[in-house]
Length: 444
Ligand code: NDP
Ligand code: 2IT
Image (cartoon, rainbow, N blue to C red; front, side, top):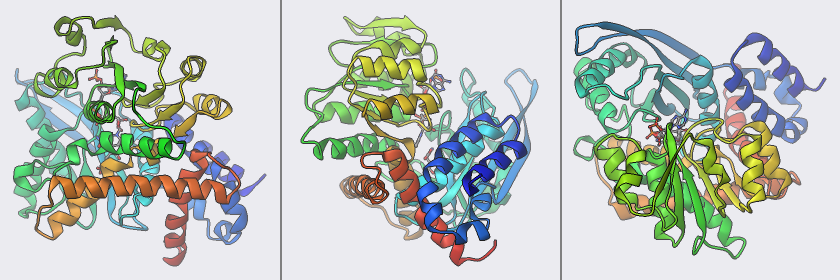
């Protein structure tokens, strides 16, 4: 049994039932084989065992009262996974499906993603099984205040800097920040994705979606190709999906379909992203309403059907495992050429295999959606320098970061004889820096 097989076997044994975490760890560890073979000292230092065990796992009770005076209790999590190259950094997810396994898979991915940005940020992730959907603003505020009343003691601008993720957008970050400031009595960059009036950065809201399109644009450029005239599918209709759709269309593509957890819309004329933004960001409504407002658009119940629509580019931007083997096969059969992940781990291991065999240009999440956290790090830099950069400046830096990530993952894949395998490239390029930092810092 090799060192990696051993670590994986023990990880499964020690973390029973954590299917998402094991899925992410399997993908990562298996692609690190050539690096580990080159560095026998890693095994002596139990580097992979340490890399896959969070530095700290915080779990807490979050009690809050609804508008009818009923008391509810949710679970709260913050997994401070790895601080070898910087303070823990990563989002908070509020969704009923959140559990320890989900937060740990996200945290593990975040370590390598944050390393790929080239900026000094470690990996962490948190959240709750609280569902903001259908709650009043006051209920969301009550929940956020209770969540932060425990979380505040664990975080800090140089310790751990949370941000948004599914179910945590500008409104939630505002309530969380207000409560942090009140308890800690300090105004610092302890959360990113803040509003522009209280320390946020221009372009942070757009950054994940824009960055996703920028990295695909670069992959296309290397193949003498471009977004011009391409048919694109974007799953989800939240923060990442909306700005991926906007940027792809600015570059000449036609986005024909999007979804939320109830169903998908198909608009052969190209999605009007302003209508989606109005429904989702302003009204907090359902994507179904798009078909009532835009002539020629159709709505279908259920999510999976979206992958049967022929497209050149697929941008999954909703959630984990939204593309299974069958959906991947459909995409390939219908001629998809690029798949790039706005969401974290949206493709199952079997789906990734289908894309690899078909030689689809496949850009995994930790590279493709790193623009969000990279811009969070730019927000941290602005906050600690007590200054604001223009939208043009932030957007230019974001684009440079995405182009660099593409070059680095491509080079890492080539270095190990795995040309165009960006899964291997991203895992190795991200891991090398973290491994070096961990080795330098001793057994901690
Ligand atoms: P939002 O909450 O803004 O949007 C999430 C979208 O995905 C909604 O349309 C939601 O539909 C849909 N969705 C969520 N869960 C499911 C599900 N189980 N089945 C079907 N659809 C679902 O979140 P974000 O846009 O911020 O996040 C989307 C993805 O991008 C996540 O995987 C996140 O981890 C990742 N990501 C986010 C970053 C960021 O900066 N925000 C950065 C990097 C990655 P509905 O409204 O019906 O729930
Ligand atoms: O998955 C992610 O990278 C995010 N949700 C963004 C994290 C951040 O700290 O901006």
